[in-house]
Length: 191
Image (cartoon, rainbow, N blue to C red; front, side):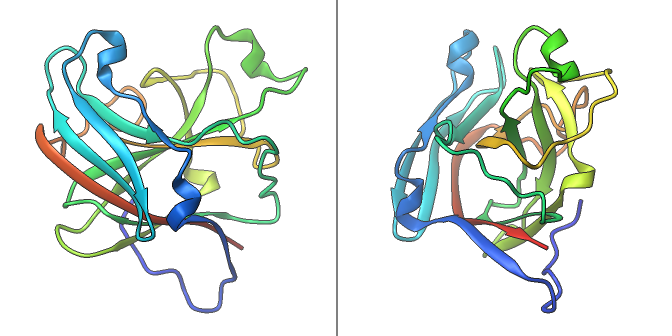
């Protein structure tokens, strides 16, 4: 997926920006024995993910939203737009959806995340378009082989990661260990 500016004729609905990131928390590979450390802090500019990334023993840092009290229903939209300063890294954006009673996803242990890789420019803001049709289901960075379809009516969490794993079951060829400082400026939906 290549960062692109959305055409001006599409309609954009802002979802999260600036201080609206105040409840986001870090989730790093230390939960599985890794040594990476990063924290999230918000400002009027957006959400900063800052720390140090260590590949051995895990290889990821992230910030994620709380579970939304009222899930987003983005069924009238085609996807998301993320404005991010990403240091030229290929990041991963993950979406969680509220489970529905008769969903095939209920057959799996653990939660499914719908993911997309988002490349960024070395300097400045990258405006990355993530079409819902391009999202892939994953469980702990592994592909989900069930015939699932993304449901934009029940989005209840967002997460931004820099990980040695890219798309489900694949390595992130742009992974870079060491100091990291990323700024998520905003998340919007587009028609």
